[in-house]
Image 1 (cartoon, helix red, strand yellow):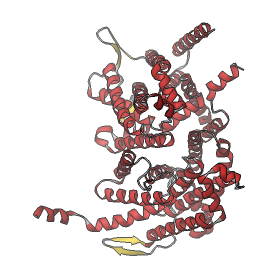
Image 2: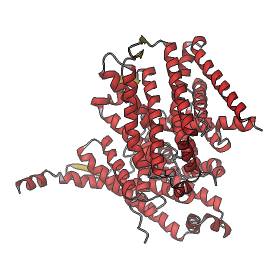
Image 3: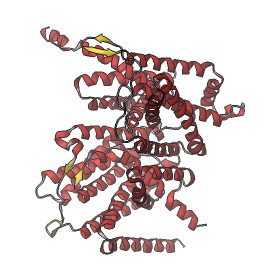
Image 4: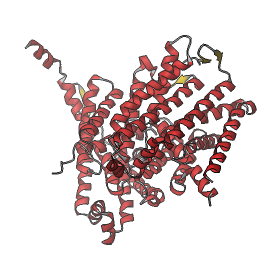
Length: 298
Length: 317
């Protein structure tokens, strides 16, 4: 009895609440990154290794535009647009010729893109981390912390973007085309849907979402050229755990994994907390290789 | 015809090995060292060719095998005094084989892209462990150690010179090449190739595909570990950077540039990549990956069979 009381007393409730909030905030950003990734995979059979670099590039463009215009929201918009256009260009130049070849070759091509983009950023912006100023600096009291409102705002904004995207997929003409192409590429082509351009559009949308999350996340940590690597790995884990090509699953998995990592970082250093998500991945692969959040087919 | 082409093959093989063996006597020190490194990276790339080219599984986790070979060798070199060459190799191989067994057990359940991602994430797990476990691995600073003496137990022992080190590496790489070549031509290798061509049918014929895949990953991992051991002996330090997945990525690049499914190709690819790096470093300094990356993308699109495959089809035309 005493032991139980002691254990209950030893649980750091305040930290758990704080980490829950943290986990949901990073989870929403991660969901925004991963939903682009899973969409690109689901439709094009392309594992986009360069996704983290698009995230990083978005953040950098955000830095530049913020310095030029002074408006965070304008910077966010410009970064999303520029990286989406860049994504479209990359898709046309490098991925379109690979259409119909082994999906594994697309991993190689996107890996090459990621190397080029990462080194380009290092060359252009240097190794020193840049800072994005948050658009508003209000804070509220969360136990012993002054918790910034901005963090909650980005969680909400990410949810909004994902929601808008879902509506677009559901009701927009291009959204319907995208879903049709996911289901049956050949049939969609036969129905007169411009499949190659749907692919380009999907890649552009995914790239734009990655860039958008990069700008949103920028104020939380510094922007540097290597930040993409961490994110693409996490997003890969999320996409596999959530089930490849499954949008809802990716969102659930993103929040799930971010929460676990946040809780783990109460007890171990954040660098080691990453292992938790690795373990989740291994367990997922062992128990349900098709993804944790995929409905069981009956 | 068959017999004659085999003869030309062995003559060509002999000439190339002889040229490589003579190289340290002629080349200046910088290029000697460069050549030794090409051989070591070539061995790593060759080991992953067994998976990429012959079994059709792209591994993005070879840095884990390489790194554990490196750190296994480091452990033996640091704990045993005086350092013993064969013990070092043994430890490195055991380290790599252990990791390979672990990775193989989990990752071979998956195919294609999932296999690539899983191996990638496994290598990151080992990276994080090595990076954060500072007491044992030295963390970010890595480990430095002494080079063991070149020894044949009870018969001969002498410190490595630049030439003998090169010859030792050459001997190990050549032997590994011959073993891997034998493996790929053996019935076992044929099964691997049939898995690459049509996994379902191979299973239907009655081969335990998973078991073959586990063995293939382990073999590949052991040879990658051997490359790690050689690297430890050559450079006398181990750092977590070598476990980072960029090394795995470079391994894949070597394979694609040189030509997958040829065993020689990856060595050629490693040489080509390192030469490109050397050349572009002069102009682009540390940003050499920008032009090299663009060349790599172009090769993926326009020359998917790689340098060796391209040369072959060009010669046969």
